[in-house]
Length: 119
Image (cartoon, rainbow, N blue to C red; front, top):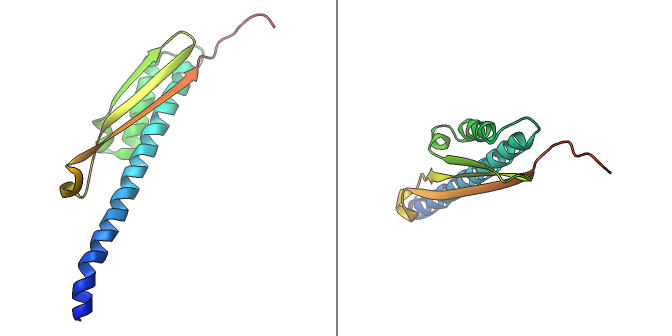
């Protein structure tokens, strides 16, 4: 009984740390996927950067729920490529470790699809 009382708090702390790491890793993966999806859509022929921004926001909200709504998304058409950036703060379940949130940023660049004449 005494051993359990001494070991249980440490095991719970380790378990919470593992869960927090997994949640942050998932949030970074969702942000990266959102930027890639937005850039891919915006780079398609006949599409606009605004459509890419909307797609990236949809992916963020689908993957992160309410936390995804607080992310900012920007899309820029540079002529040859489209760049989509997604950034925001992801809330932590262990706020006393590093604060209330951790910043997450993702960027994707995709070459524009368009018809080019010639060889």
